[in-house]
Amino acid sequence: MTDLPFPVQPMLAKAVAAVPEPDSVPGGLVYEPKWDGFRAIVRIADGTCDIGSRGSKMLTRYFPELVEALLENLPERCVVDGEIVVRKGEPGAERLDWDALSQRIHPAESRVRLLAGQTPSSFVAFDLLALDGADLTGVPFGERRKALEGVGESFAQPVHLSQVTHDVELARRWLVEFEGAGLDGVVAKPLAAGYEPNKRRMLKVKHHRSADTVVLGYRVHKSGQGVGSLLLGLYDDDGGLRNVGGISAFSDTRRLELVGELEQDVMRDDDGAAELGATERSRFAPAKDVSYIRLHPRRVVEVRYDQMEGDRFRHTVQFERWRPDREARSCTFDQLDIPAAYDLSRVLAGGGGTPG
Image (cartoon, rainbow, N blue to C red; front, side, top):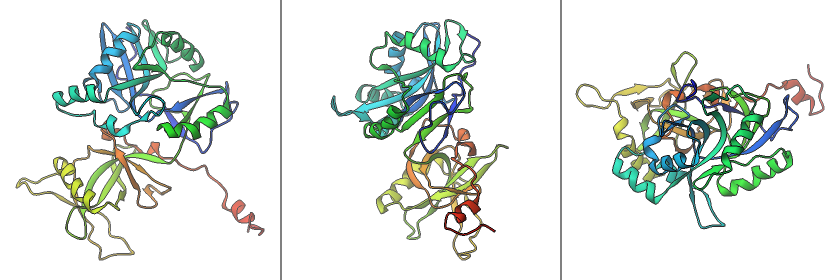
């Protein structure tokens, strides 16, 4: 087998505001749908199948039905990049089912087997990193794609080959139309680029800004019942975990549910009492209680946000979903969408004045 290390850190995408023109990068772009599932790097070697997630978490044991299908559909020696998804709905009205997919990460083997039958998964392949002992990561994507298409000629459900197009107008239609099927947007891939693990070399257009964050703790609601807000963190370049904001606005029912869901993550002192932490006091509300119940930093939540102010979310963010497929340490600042710099004087000049 190739010396390509495994698990492989997948190549990532940088967010852009709109689907880019095909000639906007040297060598051109090709476009693919952006799937809303678990990113997965699959290795087939010596009659075994290994599945690694974006954060290098091994997913193999959670998808036994997919392991069998991948062994049947993929070459005997290969490494493939793709996405694990779960489908729901009747033929002609199918869409992706994130909730069902997230439930597939479960510690109990009996539950894993039950869900494999009730909500079977599919795999969508979109890149070929190694084949028959050859490392293809240094090969341009255009060539890797042709090799993947050759491999994909014999694919059968639940293994699929992601479609691509060179037509930017079609890609823009995908961005609008495919949302109805639960997809997340469009990805533009440089045809001349090699595969660079953990580097943001591709371009993505999503329907909203999102980030995967670590849950640091929670504040009790002012009523004294349930979770009032979740405190969020991201890892910086030095490996430090920094507070970046919080989620609130939960319903009364959800506040109480969250207490139970987070119970196993609560940090406790030698006497078994929950440990408390404290955040900085707000200069606008200095009397506000800033204490919170500390949690082990291992639970990941995806949030929606509008913009950043410094290294924190500008406003309270919205809970999107738990991310059981992500390792907490993979949640870093570099995933955030940072707007391109723009001169304020040009904005002011648009109102008819002369910048000073």
